[in-house]
Image (cartoon, rainbow, N blue to C red; front, side, top):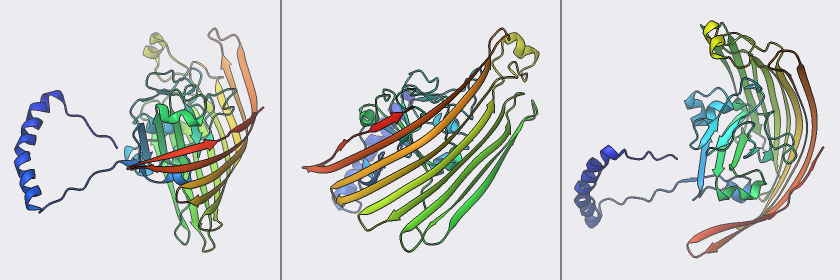
Amino acid sequence: MLIPALQPARLPLAAALALCLIPAASAFAQDGATTLDSIQVSGSWLGTGLHDSAKSFAGARTVVDRQRIEASGAASLGDAMRRIPGVQVTDNSGTAGSSVSLNIGVRGLTGRYSPRSTVLLDGVPLAVAPYGQPQLSFAPASLANIESIDVVRGGGAVRYGPQNVGGIINFSTRAIPTAAGLHGEAGVRYSAYDHGGGDSTQYNAFLGGTAGNGLGAALLYSGQDGRGWRQGSDDRFDDLALKFAYAIDAQQELRAKLSYYDVRSLTPGGLTRAQYETDPFQNTRPTDFWKGHRTGIDLGYTNTLSENSEFEVLAYYNESNRASSLINAANTQITVQPRDYRVLGIEPRYTQRLHWGSSVHDITAGYRFLRER
């Protein structure tokens, strides 16, 4: 929750109002007519089980839920991230397409391909090679399938890997509805530009529910086709996920997600001042493009051993391919760079909650085995 600070020019007025209200507040307290409750700012922590419980967080942290994302009018992950304090998101039209890469800088750190932050999707590293190439020149995620964005800045990020000097960013996909019956929605968003002649259409659909036997499933789809206001800025992507959850009993739960992402983006390139004055809509790099696809499976198991202890296992495997075609500045050579990645990860984790006086602490011990090729 963001609390706006008072402007310096308003401080005298605020102080005067506070002094005027002190006698009234004392009178209420003495008469016992009104009792003001304390206000607690809380949210869900990265992970599941104990870490999903509502609790206050003392560090620098921002959680943006789906309702706030929709109210903002954001059309992409970059648009939604720009509204988070301390986060800078940029688009590099020379070498990166908006539907392929994600350029996030936190607190002034370099943002090109997000090399200084650990970016997760449902707790799974989003980078095609989380340790070998910890960057997001290919970011297989779309805004319409996201339930919330959780950004942790500072020391609280240390448990989630080595590339976290800029913090942890966790994108959570839409949750499976727990109410009986099927629940779904679909939407279309059309954007047109009166200058340049571009138009783009975004599609999204969601369908899910939970049966009486505890088995839940959800289908998520998000897609886009069209171009922006510049010539040769065509973007097309398809983001599909199928989620499952099964409550074995009151303490144990199984989770699974199958995902597929495919994208192709043309990049019109940057313009000099003279080129912009001549035609701001022109495409100086008609042969440039980025493309990629990714298929993956995530498996999770959570056992809430007691009110204060929990065991969790997260396993994932994904295969990614991304390629780029970029021409040099002299327009004499085109470089094509196809790359393939295979990632296998297993993360067991045990959490113990301790109560010391009036304070509560969670201690987690875990291990990450990650194989990249």
